[in-house]
Image (cartoon, helix red, strand yellow):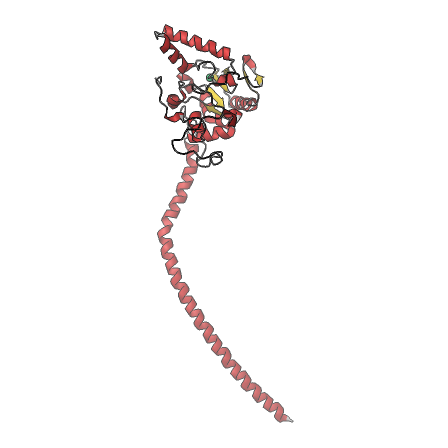
Length: 316
Ligand SMILES: [Zn+2]
């Protein structure tokens, strides 16, 4: 009765022994495979380390540079005169992609009807239509008025400037055609007194006061703002605290300095560090970032007829 059990035991021992051999062989194979993997991994690690060593200094340097760039605007926050501060990098301008592409050199006549109300281009070569009627206006203090749609942003800008302890004063805004005609004639008289002949006097006057029918003031989208402490309309206006603030912040409220000092050849209007034009916040930001004047900006969108290439006979 023991044999079967003994035999079973012996048989079982042999089976266990052969199982032990199988396990040992497997272990050996696994170890060998692990060794090969380890060797391969070690080789790979050497390669990776080599590459990292080469890249490391650049990566560190570029991180440092990025921090420096981010910090620099706050270090030097003095705005260049007549060139309002650019908030941040350029590139992603809305609108541009949505506009139809224009072939190089192709000129597209302005389609006033296609423009948003606040981007209407009015200048020496784009007069208002003869049947133009003024928009709904909001009456301001001192007999001033502005397009009702631009009013909230103007009010916010004035409030913000005053909150900074400044004293901005709107000295001119909406004008009728007749108002503009009177101003223009007054300027012609002045130029005649200065010794210009009649034709020259008119040309000269138009450099400082737009001819009637060609002024943004007639649209109710332009305001002349001065510093209460210095109300003279000359170049020194740009040094006032109000203008320094406005030139830096006007775009935040949808306004641009319309006639910058370096764009007279394109705008045909002398430098006016007091004339702000409402174009809406999105366009104001894009225009300020691009460093373009309104004519150039609209030309780039395929609107207008490429005034950027035009020369002028009356820059000073
Ligand atoms: Zn003006």
